[in-house]
Length: 403
Image (cartoon, rainbow, N blue to C red; front, top):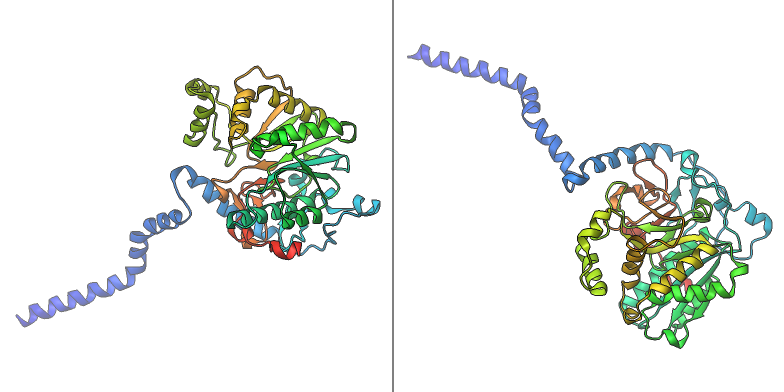
């Protein structure tokens, strides 16, 4: 019996020694597959985004290596009394990796070098180019209105710095607070008050009427036109130099280079289409397989801009003049479902030129909060609609700017 017990103990001891020696390999074989899956799940929200997210992670690592070398550039701050020599040498006219002087984001890096600068093949913006925006102040003191002002301040800071030579015109309804007057004055924005006949219009619907009236009065003074949503269109580089002026370019609701919202898709969009068009043939419209147009940005030459506004005005149903979102749904219907009377219309999808990444902001790399690059190729976007990281949403001290 003693011999048997001793043999058993020796056998157990011997097997324990073998297990301890082999344990790392055994543990690795047992755990590694699950570990890899867990790591993948950390940056994968769903199956649709799985490959894209992995691609983004790899791209961030590659881009980080590219921008480590310091670059010295004398950036011209936003001012509006440039000499001809200053205008000629302004960094915006020489697309490259730029260190920005945007307040609170002083180390932002923008990559327009090499292949990332290929979009810039048209003349840079001049004093004969115009940027239109529209605005209505509903309450001077509500928290929502203060946030709205801050968004406009941030948009102007970025876009006005980039398009320093262009003329900025903002059409507005109602009365402006002293704070907004100071802000627009600071950025050298011309203000146009809407006539009383637009009192019942929502400003989003009235803007194309107001832009049209201004263009018809100043047609001979304008070459190219950019119409933007004043609260969340960020122009990081000279978009006038990146767009064929003989085309009329509008933004789509594409959230990355693969996923787009199409006409007749999306619960909110379809509810709005039913609100304005009764019982629209959504099934037939879906078969058209055309992307949803977002009204946040339009750009082209003065003739194209006037042509678009005339088409918009001629199709406008006055009974919906006070309804927000009517102008976007109407634009989609008249562009996609009616005989197109506007030649050379381009609906740009999500690429370096412009993107609407509100739903999937992760397609851009915001490494260390000081750079913004399109994840698939490392190039910085020229225009972004929404999608800034939360840190950037809070960088701008509105009160310090106007007081």
